[in-house]
Length: 260
Image 1 (cartoon, rainbow, N blue to C red):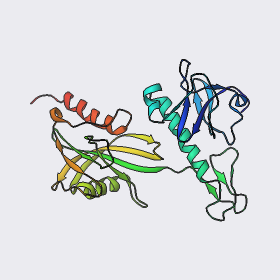
Image 2 (image 1 turned 120 degrees about the vertical axis):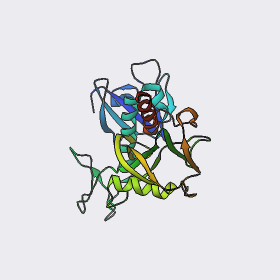
Image 3 (image 1 turned 60 degrees about the horizontal axis):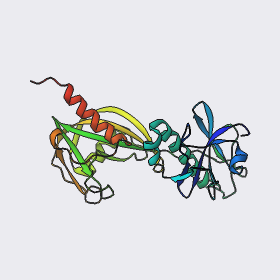
Image 4 (image 1 turned 180 degrees about the vertical axis):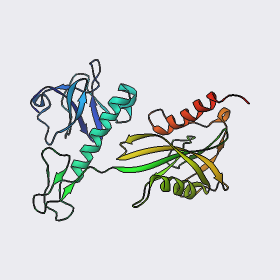
């Protein structure tokens, strides 16, 4: 890492950003940033390598600011946000696997592979990815939206939940909708996926059709749920998330439908 590169430096869950440059992240040699320990190559940015590292404090850089990860989307767009998300996930993985989960010995990054290797017992620990399914259920023009107690006030979204061991994505979609709101779905259709670095999810989004049942929210998961018509939608998630793109796609698809 002795060549010029971009650096995603993290301190206390915030990232060092700069203004008035070609990127929101600073560029330079490792020496310019105090030779950060355990730096990871996380990809390329503007045609140059990009490294990431956790630091005890940020270096003094003119215009430098401590910025939350979510804010990178607004500052620099989806591609840079995705790279920053990858960086934070890999830094979390490295920090959480400094010791072997089997024998307790110190681990080291394996050369040429994203794996923490235990020299004592040989165990390899790879970055954790937690798959989750998101489902937007439709009944004609109406969309089924719910809100979690953890959402910002007034915000509703598509339903979502984590995939369990031994479960397919399709089984997870049906189970989560049934558990959260008590209805059945049919005609599951893939939309898109999105890495979601809060902390390490892979969101897989689907459309589905309503197939029966009465909405009965699980109070442990869903504060409120209901059918919403396109002209009376509640507050929706921010554009940063695939849930908003899923809802927007449903609305765009409706506008393409010919009037009968």
